Length: 102
Picture 1 (spheres, one colour):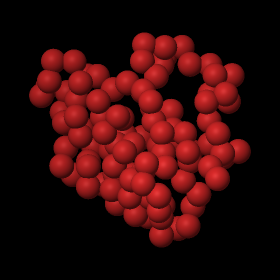
Picture 2: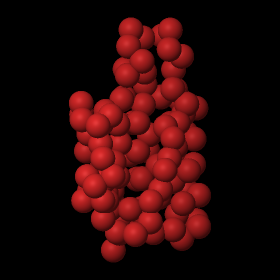
Picture 3: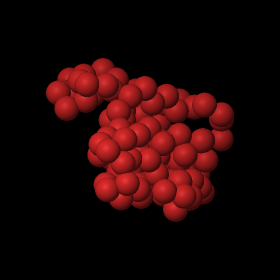
Picture 4: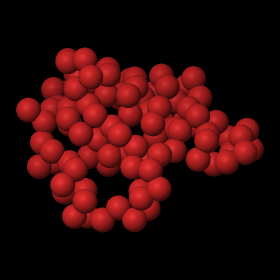
């Protein structure tokens, strides 16, 4: 099993919205996430079939942007947000969630 740790792409400044959790990606952030997916694809890396993301808007926007570009198969990645339990996610629950790609 491999574990990838990726940070969200560039988001709008914190002052632009009421809550930090609600900050969306900038146009540059969306483009950067797509470029990351292109790099992953060009590197012939095996794209994960499950991706664990926080419920923040910027992470929910980053994941499909890189994943759809990286995968040769449409909708290969599944990235349901973790909801309120995100901060209490244990390593055991991650092991049960992350599955190797096929």
